[in-house]
Length: 394
Image 1 (tube, rainbow, N blue to C red):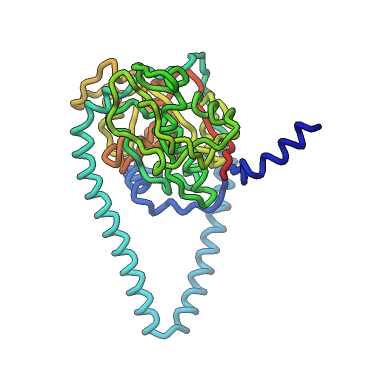
Image 2: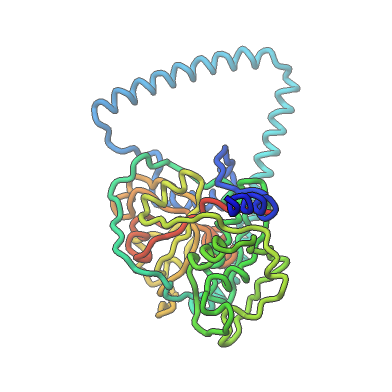
């Protein structure tokens, strides 16, 4: 009883509140990165092409079409009546405002893509550096049997707040898991209207248990160790980037760059709960609930050089990126799912998973790309993925 009372007294000062993932009407449709990814998918097939329906489905579809046509006709008639009641000058003004809005949005997209082209030139110059900092993910391998049927597959679902967190760059260090792990926390915070830039430097240190106190030289990590370290910590432990800045250059024989500055232990958030996510079908269920998932996969040439879409069909093509042992593994975060056009489903599967990477905006479409079901099935790591369910903040 005394322990329970003591815990109740301590919790309010230690953890002001516990946050979970938040759903809502997320306006992602006009985000340039999403539009760029979608345009790449449309190049492979027409979304208007429909699958063959059974007779029962045809009857329902025909009834819906008739109702839709009737409603459209009624709306058109009401619109005509309303238009006759409007002043012509008002109509001209509204048209001009609408035209300016559309032109402004188009200009923004054009400028955004020009910026990506500059970023891409920088990225392509660094490909060898990124290759040298991929690694065999330190996971306990297990047999994962993917589900062949995905129930209630959405046409598109993007995790709430996914595009609200800026794309980062890990530079010349094997810290992809740390960037993916931190991004999951930042998205959860964004869903709760909190804009925090958290420290990947600290997270990488926390993710390597044998390198926290003593220097070590082996590269890479996985998110579970850092999440568990935070979960078991009595204090809120994960600091802001401003207090524990990420070093873009590595140190020989000191991967975690210890000792960390004292500011690195001024935490603002901590992990309360996380879980394994085994199959791609489970990943989609998490995404539908607005929970991002940290993935890991072996890499192919078309993963390095893509415009926002990574397919199994192109995985074996030689596109000028020499692969070696450094393509053994890489971590990134799943933030959406898009159903694929019917024409490419036989070769690529039913969907692609939208991921955010940590190689800057020059990779993919502004740092994002959609990986097809069959590419992921073949190249995913044979071990569970990870999702965070709850975090605490001061």
